[in-house]
Image (cartoon, rainbow, N blue to C red):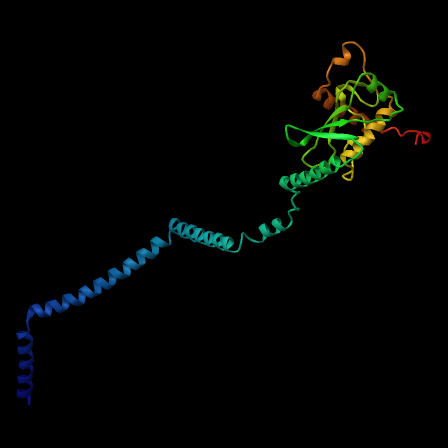
Length: 272
């Protein structure tokens, strides 16, 4: 029995001695290499975790995340039309005033209609000529005033066939009054002031109504000439001095300011 056990031990020793040493070392190296690689991988993972956990990298990541979020929010606002605040402000905007082209169309239609009606008048009270074919700039000839007035007598004696006025219409006519002034002859009194300006309340923004027609304004002017005892100026030198538009505009502006401050004087009841 002892001899048998001894033989088995010798066989095991023989097998161990006959194994390839290189193979044995390679297996040992492979085991050690795998262990080393695993250790390196673990170290690299740990190092990356340490680097990413530094404050600088964290700040970069947070900043990049914030930019991405802002970009996303901006894109969503563009897609939804700019957000609720913009929609609220847009809805609270007041309606725009009428555009200028629309006002021009209203003025043109009104003046064309009035021009046709004046030309159909049968009493030859007034006639109209367009200044350089401008529909918004009229020269109006007043052919008649009260035939019992001194002014009518002056017209006969001086062979004055008409009183010439210039009427210009603003962009927002008939909602604003025209500007009217006397050109010839040079008149005194009759509510005709320096430069040919006319002192009439209905020619001011406060006294004007869009229902007034040019014909109605001219009839009122003819009546005010007689009422104010207007006369044709016959003084030497002064009668030949032409009225100035610039002077008329300045005078009219001044009288409007004065009347707005002190009011317009109403005529006595006895005068109608």
